[in-house]
Length: 116
Image (cartoon, rainbow, N blue to C red; front, side, top):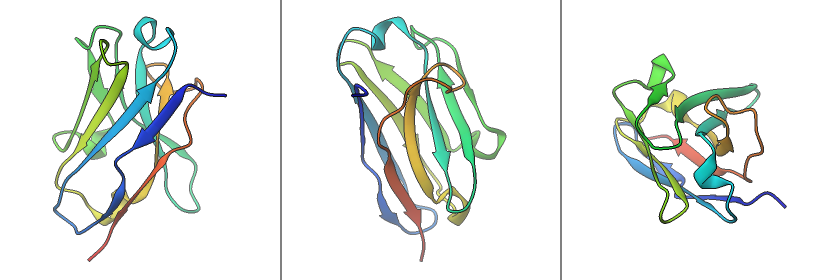
């Protein structure tokens, strides 16, 4: 059982915002860099953003730079992703994962659909 549970997805109009959360159980969260990855319909897994253990270093896929913000609260064992100015091409299943570039275990995902 993977100790990551994502939430916060939904159906939104273009230009709107969403806040995704990833609740982690167990001690592994605070000792690992984390990331968000996504998979659009019919496409492969795509890395979106990563954050280091202390939250001091972050990085983003070029397509989301300036629109998405990753953060973490180690006291709450929770990873976040703020999605602003959403576009239709952001439609995907979003997963949190262990590892700065993903690659580690991930949760079951939360669906984000951007449509008018």
